[in-house]
Length: 251
Image (cartoon, rainbow, N blue to C red):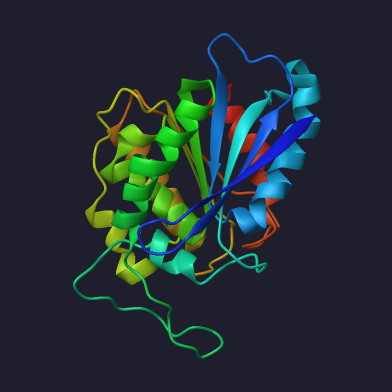
């Protein structure tokens, strides 16, 4: 079983609700591994249920009990417009495609401030309040969240040990994320898992595969993987790859 604790943070640009799911069992000697979940409104409860069920038989599933930190926004919608600000890198000039509904893009370019919030406020709070395993700190992000995962990997790789980017929006601002791509020299980073749907939705598949190939080619000692499940779309891919990604990263 898991118990739930909720906290509010003012943040640097807008408030957050932090939903924490804690295993109700003795804490391992090394502490609980931690999964930080972006777009927690959409995925926090889903991932908690998946981890809760599978961790009952870790020896079979490869999924261990862990502390889940769901980063959420106020309101009930699964994808708040503030995510666009939090998950996108700053840029002097931005060139974006038209949105499907014809609306203008929300405010964007706040990834540095969001990383500041994670580094200075949220991560220390979690470390101080709970006994956690510093060698197993994972961040998960989907779509623009996946873009932020990669941006964090390139800009402040020390923040997490494992990076899970699902359908990362590498296309954002004419693939500006590629200008940040670098060798990962931080030995604290243990693994990177990238997944993308095998359809040409803003070239998610092609861009994700190319990113994986560059990372694995330039970082021979880094555990990396790419997975493209057949017949999955941009939303269905999340539950389809979650367990596989977690087993790879922590196996």
